[in-house]
Length: 320
Image 1 (cartoon, rainbow, N blue to C red):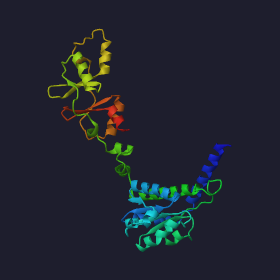
Image 2: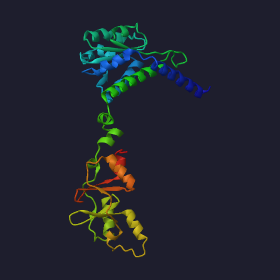
Image 3: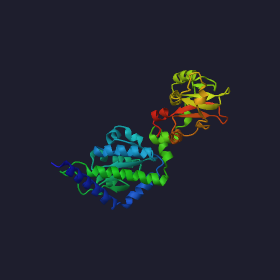
Image 4: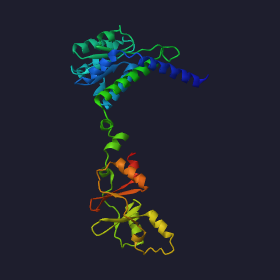
């Protein structure tokens, strides 16, 4: 049995379903977008079985892209949760056949609330279509299932149409990356747009020594500081230089090296630093990578040390 061919046939059937639907978008789709845009409440998605699973994903997509939304199971609605639907809400009801018993049971009650209903179904003569203010067609010629029974092409199309609705709403609302990040503060985009240097930098127990400190004592400070580096500062803790464990290793190769030497002579003078702790952590990472350094020193405008930011901290916190 050639599974590769079967997979290709499956994807081709579903792709053709999507293309056919794209070429036959009904005007009701545009009206549905307008209804949702004018909604002062929430978009409530409902459906049973596979349609319910797709509906739950739709609700999550809507909610994360600027349209307040949640999924309501028709059975739960029949047993008290209908109270979650208000007059200012909009209901998006999904049923491929349009005759789901559980869904059909709640439609008269929703209509009684004068809540707009947008139906997603293949049948404009179905119970769902008759109760709907607008109908989004599920135009499926053939399921990818070899028996033409299991929901395959139909669920793919339903999911894609939900995405199309979400994208239309995003475009209409001019939904930006910063808006998306606000709904996903723990995600990669949220971290890039909101986490600042001040949120991650080390402020306390920063290893610092004076310019006359010996190499031997500087090595002890590096070991105790556990950031692989010691800062060299003046009496007012203003940054003068820094010495990394790599600098010490390179110094060991010199014939005139001594542990009693002043560490300042082996230091990196005028190291990279910033005086803006409100800089985005993602921007700090770019700076660290461009300068090929591991540690970024944070100072005030007078070069007094306020903290340090290590590349390992950025990586651990998922900044990219």
